[in-house]
Each structure stands twice: as C-alpha cells, then as structure tokens.
Length: 281
Image (tube, rainbow, N blue to C red; front, side, top):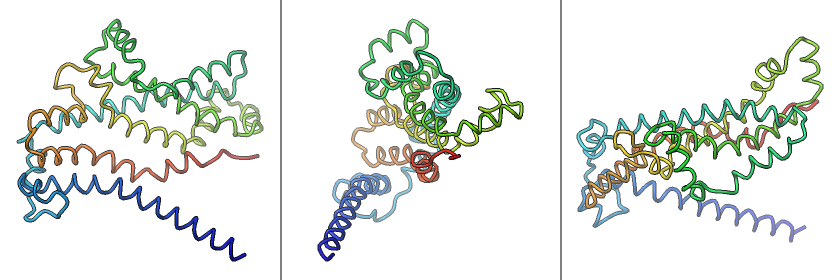
C-alpha cells in the first residue's frame, strides 16, 4: 500500500513538473513580447526580461492609431479570411459528415479514408500543385484563394470529429424523427446540428486560430500589401523596423491578442467537443 502511495505521489509530482515546464515555455515568450513593447530600444537590449521602467505606451498607441504601421487593415483581412474559412468548413463539413455517418453506400469508407489523408500531408507538401491550381482558376491575390485551401486542409479534422459524433447518435432517434415527418434534412438541422454544437464550436475555434496564425498560404497567394494578413504584416513590419525590436514586439503582441482571447474564452467548448459524446439510447 505504501509503495502504491509513493508511486502515485511520484507520478503526480512528475505531472506537475511537466505542466510547470510547459507553462514556462508558453508564458516566458509572451511575457517578453508584452513587456518588450513597453520599453525603449536601449532598455530592451540591456534588460530584456525585467519590467519596463519607465513604462512607454507609445509603441502600442502608435500602432492602434495608425501612426506606425498599418495594423487595422491587416486585422480586418485576417478576420475576413478566418471567418470565411470557418464558414466553408462548417457548411461543407456538416453535410459531408452527416452523409458519411448515416448514408450507406459502397464507397463510404474509401471516401472517408481519402479525406483523412489530409491529416497526413502538411500544406507545404502541396505547395507547387496548389499554386498552379490557384493560378489556373485566377484565385491568386484574392481572399478566396486563401480561404479555400485552408478549408480544404481543415476539413479532415472536421469530418473525423463530426462523423464519429453523429454515428454515436442512436438510430432510434432518427427513426422517431422520421415517424414525426422529418426528412433527412429536417433531422440534420433540427436534431443533429443542435446535438453537435460542441463539435462545431471546437472545429470553429481551432480553425479560426489556425487561420489567424497561418503565414504560408497568404504568402503564397497575396501579392499586394493591402491584402496582407497579420502574420504577413509582422514580416513586413520587421523588414521596415529591423533595429527597433520594441516596435516589433508591440506589433507581435497586438497581432496575437485576438487569437489568445478567442482561445481562452472558448476553451471550454474545445474540451467539451473533444471529450463529449452523443446521446446514448
């Protein structure tokens, strides 16, 4: 009994140690970024980890008022592309997930396996054919040219989560809906979608955060600076202010704040979507 207790304590200590290390790995760069934006260049170089003294808000206020860099247009571009990607994934993924989970046909398993291959290949692998395809459809330098590839690569996760969730919904519930006069579409929109809210919320948040941080696809598609997203804005800003690291850190902080807020506010939906189950009969 004592050996079991000691082992349990040791395992708990290891878990807490790992969690503490992970928190430090995440928190220290955030701290340096936020505090660095409040310092002068000289103070940042001399004391990069210390608290700012005196506190200088000019870097942040100049960004927000447009005096230093074009932050707001790039923020709007990121929001439009992120919401567009979420909308495409939710619409297509809901119909496809329901079809693969409830409609029996010969190629069901093969089609699902084909979609899941998207989890195995990163976007960088398909860079050349993707560029050629976007060019052939005249989608370069347009928001649609970014939204569609992001949605295509995010659809695999949507189908994986939603298909399993829908398959767990009892068949008796669908039969009862059919007796009440619901068609397949009625069952989908009045029963399946409300029950799948945790999954849909999870996919929406993860997709939005992924789109917000995506640098590679906008770099491939966009040519004009007015269509840049925030990650590309950071790259452009670093090129213009290579020596002013306090300005760069302020821009980085402002760029990541929306994604952090979204993730913190919606983390309960992510946990519920990844761990929850459907109604059991």
